Amino acid sequence: MSYDLVIAGGTVATASDTFSCDIGVRDGTIVALGHDLGPAKETIDATGHLVLPGGIDSHVHIAQPSGEGIVMADDFASGTLSAAFGGNTTVMPFCMQEKGTSLRQTVKDYHKLAEGRCYTDVSFHLVISEPSEQVLGQDLPALIEDGYTSFKVFMTYDGLALNDREMLEVMSVARETGALVMVHAENYDAIRFLTDRLERGGHIAPKFHGTSRPIPVEREATHRAISLAELVDVPVMIVHVSNREAMEEIARARSRGLKVYGETCPQYLVLTEKDMDGLNMEGAKYVCSPPPRDTASQQACWEGLSNGIFNVFSSDHCPFRYDDPAGKLIPKGRTSFRWVPNGIPGVETRLPILFSEGVGKGRITLNQFVALSSTNHAKTYGLTKKGSIAIGMDADMAIWDPKREVTISQSLLHHGSDYTPYEGIAVTGWPVTTILRGQVLVRDGQLVGKPGQGGHVARERSALAAPAGQLPTSFAPAGRYR
Ligand code: URP
Ligand code: ZN
Ligand code: ZN
Ligand code: ZN
Image (cartoon, rainbow, N blue to C red):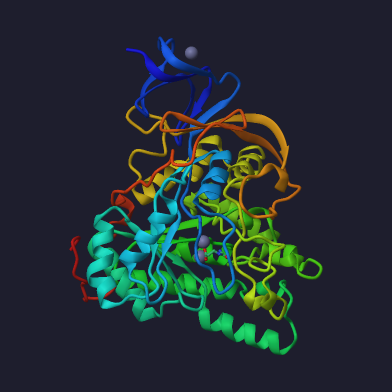
C-alpha cells in the first residue's frame, strides 16, 4: 500500500537517538521508518536536513484579556501561524478564568476564539483565578476528566494571585484528579511593596520593572510553592524560571524525593535586565515576568537545560504590540512601569535560539534539544501521540536546515507584534518545513497550510503528575492515589 507522504534522505533525531532513515506517513500517522519504503503520493527530499518531531510549546498566551484597554497582539490564527513558521506543530495556550466567569464558560469562550482559526494543533491548560466551591468541587475535576489535564496558578498579579490557602485547595484537587499544577512563582506582596516605594521615589521607567521583581521575590515564592505542594504531596511545574537561586530550590526539592519540574524560556538565555534600560519607553519591549536577569543567570539557565533541572523549554509567548496605546505604550504605562503589560513575543524564535545557542555552541546535544523542545512537553502534559518520531505517533515534524544563517528580525516573523525582543540576534539553523499530522503547513519557508488545519487536542493524565507518595506529616490528603 502506498504512503500519503514519505520524507526521504533526512537525518532523524529523537530525544534519544540520531539516525538516517525515511519516514512513511499514512492518515496523519507515522507508519514506517526505514529505507526504500516504496510508492508515496508525495515525497519530500530532506537530504542534508534534520527531521525532528514538531516543536511543542507548552507555554503560550493567545487572545487573553490582559487588562483594561490592552489587546494581546495575537489571535489564534496569527499565534499558531507564527508557531508553525517557528517549527512548531502544537502550542499550549491558557483558558484564563477571569473573576466572575465560570471555568466552564471560560473554556467555551476560548474554544470559540480558536475554532477554525488554528494552523497548528492547540491543547489548552486552564488558569484558576477563583477557586470557589463550584470550581474546586465540580468544574475543575470535570474539565480534567475532559482532557484539560493541567492548570496554572499565579502567586502574583492583581485579579489572579492565589493566597497560600487557595494554593493548597487547588493543589489538593490536582492530587485527587491527577492533573499537573503549573506555578507562576513570585511574591505578590513583596512586588507591591517595592513597586510602591519605587514609584514614590519617582522611579517609573520600564527598567524599574526589573528592580521591582528581584531574584529573592522569585526564589521565595518558588520555595513556598514547593513547600505547599509538599504538604499535599502533589507534583508541581515551576514555570519561567529565570535564575540560579530558583533552580537551587528545585534541585533541593528533588534531592528530598519530591516531584518538582522546571521550565525556562529564551528571554532568560539571551536577554538581560539591561535590555529594559532603553531610552524613553523602549525598555517596555522587554518587560516580562520574571524579568530577564544578568549573564550569570543566563549561564545558570544553560546549566539547568543541560543537567535536567529544566524539563521543558517554552517561549512564554505573550505578545503585545509596542507602538500601540492598546499595547506596551498604554498611556498609563508612562506614569509607571506598573501598568506596562507584562509579556513578550517568542513562539517563532524559541527553537532557532535554542538550536543555535544550544546545539550550535555545544551547550546541549541535538537529542536534548528535541527533548526540551518537544518530547518532554508531550510527556509532561499527557500528549501521548505527539513529541517523537516513531511508528504510531502523529506525523508532526519539522525539517530543519541546520546550516541556514539567519539574523532574527521583525520583518521575517509572522506574529501580531510589531517588534521582536530578539531583533539582530544571528542564528545558525532554521526550520524550513513544518508538517502537522502528515499535512504540510510550511514548505521551504512558504505557507501552504490553512487556518483550521490545526485542532484542539484533549490530553491524558501525565504519569509525571502522579504523587510521589511522600507526606511530611501524619495528615493524609484524600485522593485517588491514596
Ligand atoms: O510576563 C509574562 N510572563 N507574561 C505572561 C504571563 C505569565 O505570567 O506567564
Ligand atoms: Zn533512504
Ligand atoms: Zn507566569
Ligand atoms: Zn506565561
